[in-house]
Amino acid sequence: MLLMILLLLGGFGALYFGADWMVRGAVRMEGSLGLSPIVIGLTVVSLGTSAPELIVAILATLRGNADIAVGNVLGSNLANIGLILGATALIQPLLVSERVVRREIPIMILLTLLLFALIIDVEIGRLDGAVLVVLLGLFLTYVFYRGRKAHAPLPSEYVQLAEEVKTGKGKAVLIDVSLLLAGTLGLLLGGRAIVESSIYLSRSLGISELNMGLTVVAIGTSLPELATSVMAAARKQTDIAVGNVIGSNIFNIAGVLGVTGIVRPLAVDPGVLWVELPAVVMLSLLVLLVSLSPMSKGEFRIRRWEGGLLLGTYVALGFWIL
Image 1 (spheres, rainbow, N blue to C red):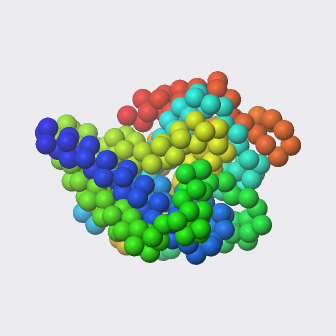
Image 2 (image 1 turned 45 degrees about the vertical axis):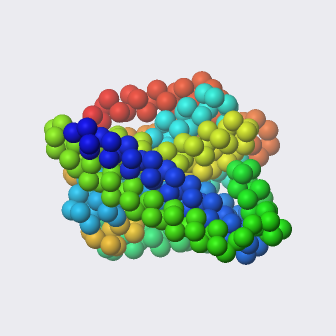
Image 3 (image 1 turned 120 degrees about the horizontal axis):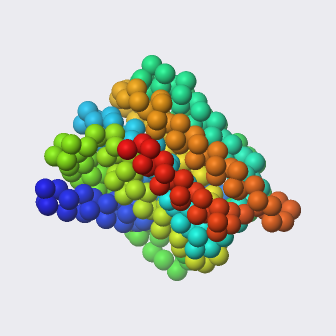
């Protein structure tokens, strides 16, 4: 038991550092190619920090443990909104751009509602997965098109990293490839460790694999989002914190469940339709409501008490689900 707990913690560490190294390597490569901030922001910050959920979901599904995969995605989306945004807003009130309020959050809610239709037959099949992946592609295409001339904020350390590569201060190719390979290896090893230890612990403790995915695994795979959001809030780059979380949730639903469903159809526990998925919808609607606090033209905010409301609702939903 102790060995499996240590394996689980080690898996979380490998996932966290693997995601960080992969993100840094990708930032350097995109910076050396001279790509715009909107491209880096979409492909690195939101998609990169969702890599742990994708790796864990694929490995768990291939292992025949679809409940861990589904629970991980839904639990991560709950944790991203309630735990990460809630706790971050308590540290520093969060600015929310008009783009996120009027576009990204509604899209996240619509995708979550779409899941009801896709899993009504208690399975995410290959056709369902293809639909989700196509929708993700359309969303990214739309954002690229609308954001070509728009400023897309990035965490300051990533901006500095990309600029250093552009000015030739780093040995781009060798470092880029090394970071990407190290990050990918860390994600694969960490994901394997988490899946194996979670299966053992859930069976030993009498906890369902779905609940294990919703709680322990989900919080662990959300560590990259938590680190990015807290750092952004501490540096008063709070619009990055919100955009990162919402973008990650969109990718979790459309990308992680979509790709995993294509790799192998996912059997879904029928209870998800009545408990876990409604909880995600409820918290998603709540973050839209609290984000509508106007601050100035084109800018909204999540105040400290609203962050406390998100966090408290997350805890209450956790007791209801479990």
